[in-house]
Image (cartoon, rainbow, N blue to C red; front, side):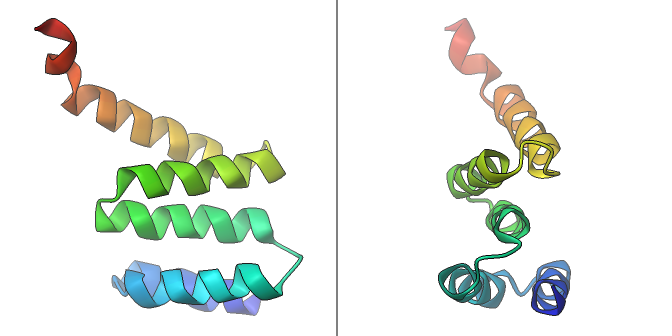
Length: 91
């Protein structure tokens, strides 16, 4: 869990590329806290503006733990994308 706290700090400092690399390594080597790792990975991708990767990782976190905070994050990203793409539906 300490490793995830360190990664969370990287994300909050804006060092998302390093955070994503660390999360990839964590997910390859750890069997515990995978839902939290995918949630953090989603946050890192979201901060980079890569909405699709963020959604993919939030979905993986929710598949492991339906009560993950990724559920709210997923809904928030969908709301943002629906707001920005609203004009696509009105053409």
